[in-house]
Image (cartoon, rainbow, N blue to C red; front, side, top):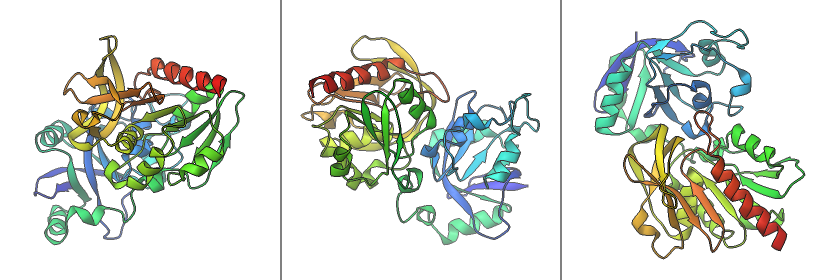
Length: 362
């Protein structure tokens, strides 16, 4: 038996799977949940989950095995995975292996047999909070008696581990884009490649002058992990380019654009992780979107920034999209590239129009 123990003493029992280190170093992080019914591979390899312990509410996980081509990144920064029922087989004739083998190979600790319904209700009532994975409940309780959640925070934000360490080029025949990689998903890169863009993928700390030195026709600021308020230096550099280029921000990218313009963000009680409906302020049309974000922008702080709200969340009314026609800025909290979940072609089409129009008049 193994345990997930929270700082308030609440504990959930299960069985360990995957890779659990033999030493006494505790496995801890913010515990969050995703309500999507499929897409566990894309979630586990989504770098926006860096430093977190992910609970999947779908009861059976692993039933179609593991397929390398569906990985969204080449590294795993997730700290733990919690499931109700773990499927042991590969489930698909063209699978490369099963989920447990993948977790073991990539040193990811898992806890199975957990009452994920009860756990999700606990998190929904109390908000996302820090927990530890331990083999003995008493060991977890001792950790919280001796330490605080700060123990599991990195000295430097996760985004610097999630993003690329070195610049690289993805050739393409079309306009040139600079992409600020805060933990970019491969499917976003694929969707931009499909439109013919030439991509300069840049590290998170790239200064504005280096971004502009690539002479891009547009800038994409990717999704990524962590609190936007801890990334003031990146927001400052973003602020130097927003009047110079068409910009698309996704997830954390939206939050940094808002901060750069003078807006404010706040932490959502449980975050939005799964498939959520958003409604367009322009058409009134509702769209189901794929989401993974724990922070949102305070709409009232956008007055005077030039930003207008493009999408709002149907469930809680929070900001899910922004635009600024004066500076050709477009940003969404959700994943327009899907993976997992529905894609939103409208976002790519609108950004494409911004970039190609700007390139023609440059």
